[in-house]
Length: 138
Image (cartoon, rainbow, N blue to C red; front, side, top):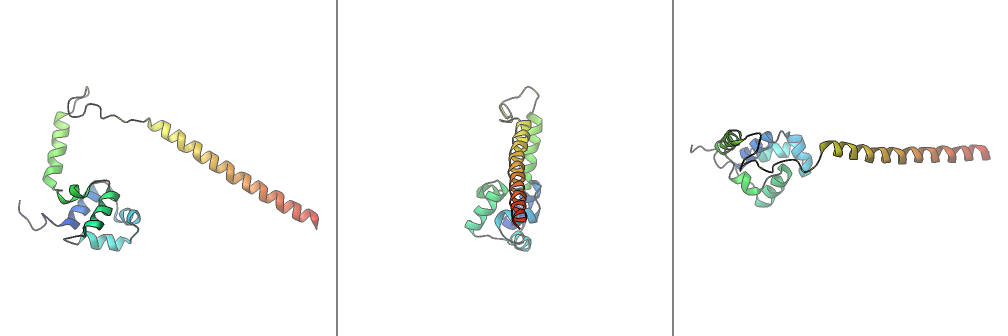
C-alpha cells in the first residue's frame, strides 16, 4: 500500500491520538499549545524531531512508534491479541495484570480530597474567628 499518506507524520499523529481516545484540545493542553496549533501539526507532512518527541510523550508512545505507525500493523496487532488470548493466559498475555487495585486508588484519592477539604474548612473557620474578633473590638 504505497499511498501519499504513508509517511505523513501529521496524519499518523492524528490517528494515534484518535486511537488513544484523545481530543485535539486534550493534546493541545498537554503540549501547552492551542487546539488550532495541534490541527496544523496534524495537517503537516513533516515535523521537527524535538516537537515529535514532545508529541510522542504526550500521546504515551515513542517517536519511532509514530514514525512507523500504520493501520495494517494496528489491525494485525489486535487480531493477534484476540486470536491468542485465553482466560488462563499464554505466552502473549501472561503476567499482564494490573499491579494495583483500582479501588485502592479511589480510596487514596478520596482520602487526599478529604484532607484538602479539612484544611480548607479550617482556613474558613480561622477567617470567621478573626472577623468575629475584629467586630468584637469595635
